[in-house]
Length: 244
Length: 163
Image (cartoon, rainbow over all chains, first blue to last red; front, side, top):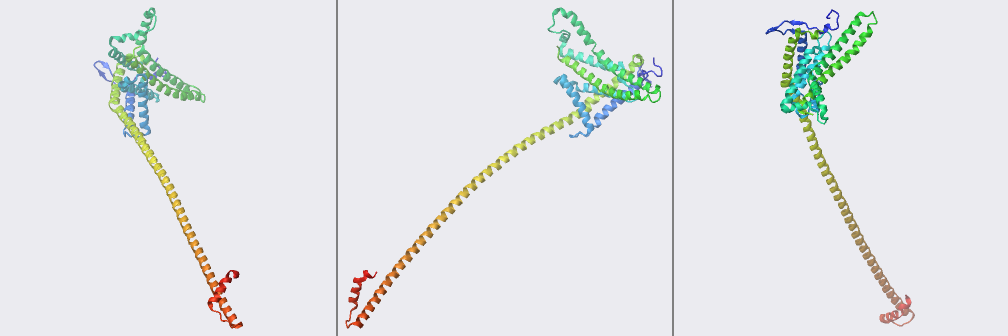
């Protein structure tokens, strides 16, 4: 499968330094390196641009403020007043996925969001956190979340299992959405990049033009998927506060 | 597909936990409070400026009102002064005119009196001359010596027919 020219070769993990801890392989890999770059970019950008704390912002400071307001608005629109407590988490999540996707758009850079284990771990944190939050807010009553009021009683044996399954599949849908989008986009780019090389002289311009257009689209998707990840997290948090 | 190879799952999860936790704590404790203070500061500044602008506007309106009041007052005062001056001037003119009239009347009456007096004097002179001439004429023509009284009596008698 992972042949030399396979479009999936870009997703292979290469350890940079082999580390072992308690019998587990926790090597620092190219994926970990991409995460490190992502975290550094976010922390440096958000810290340095706001360093002057000027009332009239510079352009860079304005970008940080726009991001802040974007997520703050998102949370207040979906969750309301309760959402303020989760702002740091949702903001971190959004920035991590967004910059992770963007770092992946740099040629030869690894895209850690194209790995299901990473996206699933993030989605699982959201899912477990929201479920715990639901139980904290509503106690045992949280189970009424699966009970849809105003439906004929004979429908409940059918609807309650559906609701439970849909609830349990949340982390899967959340993680697979991001993972599949990144996987598909980057594979497509690689396939067309292969065409540029393998096609005869001059005709290779067409797949090249296609790659340029597709790169634009991928950047859009990178933003969109981060946004979707954040807004779904907000909606799940909202569900933990407001049962049906 | 390399994604499904469990060889690096633990490594991925470990480093994800490390980096994401670091990112979360850093943003929570450092970056986001900074941005929040900047935004808050700006909002405060805007509110402050807005309220001071409102205050200044109110002050400006008050001053405008004062100015208008003063203008109106000044207008009324000027109107009154103009009226007063006109009245005073009119009074002055009329009093001066009346005194002039009086002067002229007096002068006219004085002149009339003088004319009358001089007329009387002339009449007296004429009478005397007549008396003298009569006396001389009568003396020359006749030897009768007339006394002044007799002549005067005759003159008085005929005085009406001379006029």
